[in-house]
Image 1 (tube, rainbow, N blue to C red):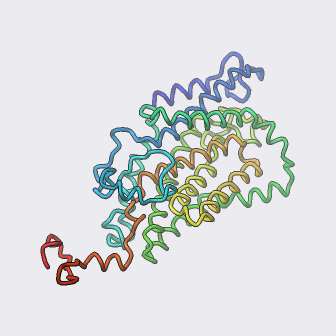
Image 2 (image 1 turned 180 degrees about the vertical axis):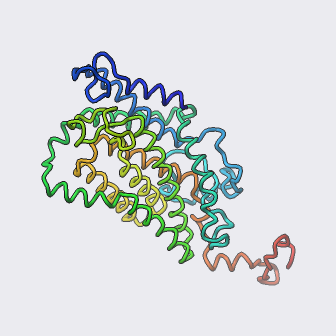
Image 3 (image 1 turned 120 degrees about the vertical axis):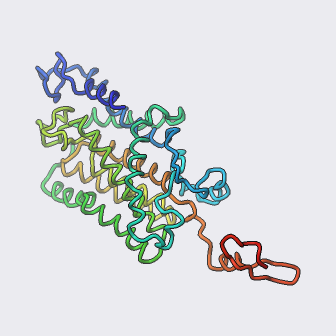
Length: 364
């Protein structure tokens, strides 16, 4: 995998005698449009393939801690009961959930579910970065859609941003709105899901916070790695050319947008968890859209940057949800169902059956 990244980085960033505009080391400002577009397609195509293909886990990523409740064969009846909006967009093999059965109702404490998270992050990253080697052919359409769309926007970026009024009001409002997608807004919001869910004994809300944290960490790790490779100048840097390899700092690359990837990752998790009422996913995606549009309005990113980040973020949220969601939460028994579980109907009328571990079904 590292050899693939290095080879792509060298191809995209290596200056040539033709001198690609915005690429460090270029000897002239003249360039070949075809060569530049080819390089952008390769860079955009690889990240799109990586994220989209990341939905298909590698054969070796099955979690040994996966409980029988998450076994695909044993869980088939439950899966049929689920609303289709509760499933990830692509086929994701369920892994160990962030909330296991022993964690329900805070039985293991507030902090215990976080102890497992570092291992889950490592598994996620391995699946995402090695996914092109084990993707399904049916997922190629995602590479085509997002790779082509990103390349098209990158090619038209400079023209699009010059059509904006770029007034003082636009910049001020956009900077204010983009703050809602920053770390100091998303992290407390995600923590609120977990803390409120724990306090109110709402396991789905609690799980939303845990999956949200995992998705945010995955998104940040992925976006920083791609920023190091792309090193794209922001709209107000390097004369606004938006050249790859032309940024003042690889850690501050414009491509892809960090705000976009994290905001859309969290919005994806919330929308998957709460598909009904429809206002919830609509509000989540509207919030994420406002943030990414404001990043362009604040002249911090080009349209191609936020499109790439949004697509990556949505798929990361979709992937983490598919891997970590505990499907037992989709059909939690009601109080009446719990009572009826202790009653058996016999010839002489209802009989109370004590639910003693190891003796259930033997005492009448």
